[in-house]
Image (cartoon, rainbow over all chains, first blue to last red; front, side, top):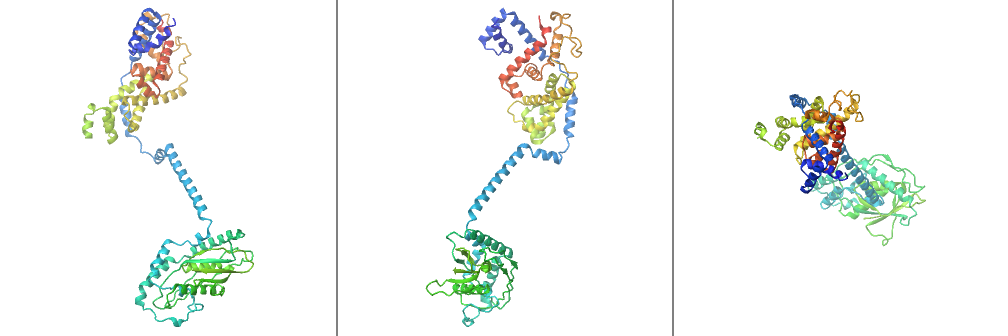
Length: 358
Length: 203
């Protein structure tokens, strides 16, 4: 009977009383006429009741005892099991994702930073610690230059152009003591370490190398322009004293500016004896004196200029090419902040022309 | 408060006992839950496995897992449903293990169960025992024996549906499958059992 298939599907719900009323009525009528479906229903009922009446032995008391025993005897988790428990696959995945994110951010930052900061030489050379700049500003008002003393090296006024007779009166120790203390502190903070200076020089040499490779560019000039941005201001010492400043002896790598300029530039130890030298306090005069001293020390010479060609706060001079790093180092050691406005070109001469302004 | 809870734990609802256990880790609350459900769990395990020792071991595993994972019970379903689910999951491992280790004395469904030489079943020859003459208890016993020959999936749904008298929805929740799947699986299981009982149930 083809209809039996439909009723076969209904049997289970009919037995459970889940069939809708009309369908249940229809099912009843079909069962009254179909012996096969009746038998099927009977079997289904038998199976259901057999399953319901499946004999189950009483629950053994042993079950509870076993469970309790196992629970009380549970060993303390070992380090390895704790490790496995903590570093589940899910957690490891999350940790990995976070690590990958940081790596990507780091690489991105490195790429961005390096691409942004590499090209300019000026930004590297002029970099000074913020604290240092602040210290200069603080003490600028109340003190005068000790820097001049250190620049004069042995204490002789060799190129200052100002006779000692200009000195009118020595400041008393009492008036100068606070300023001196402040200066000492500032000097301690500002004094670049030998390593830092070495790094600075190396960076500069690298930059020079880069620049010399691209020397054909129109920006390069025969005269190196250097602009002093800020100069330290210090007070004169209150009493005669001797101060030894020793720089690290080292050999600079060749600046590689040109084929002719390959001489190594050893930086000799400087011994600066500072003596009490009360001076008139003008920044221009001090800077001129300092620069004159440094240039003379490094074997350079001032190129006299016609009065109208250069402003008063600038200086034109010649310097042996291999002493350029040493010159910059001296400026560094005296806490000058400067900018290199142009780069040297390959020059057959061993001297370079420099113009410095402040 | 905890002491009070545990002292008259028989009056407490499952949820209260569970919360009490999770908060205080007090064994008394867990013991009360176990007392309440051990018959049901053991009965279900026995019907599924048809063996006392195995049922004991399975029930034990169910309660140990329950102890470890009770804090994960979200309370969306009945606690008994959750326990059934644990039992079903453990049962799968049991069957897999049994299939691997005890293939020697397993009974194949292709085998004619009516043949003599099947000692555990001890089925009387149909021609000697016509259906009309067999007492109802004997038929039931035969059905129970044949039940063990069903595939685990079919046995599970039949036990859950008829022995544990759970609704289709509850079974679907325990097995983690749709209600429609449960219904069709029950139909197929019943047909398989009827096939196994052909000689006995036929008029």
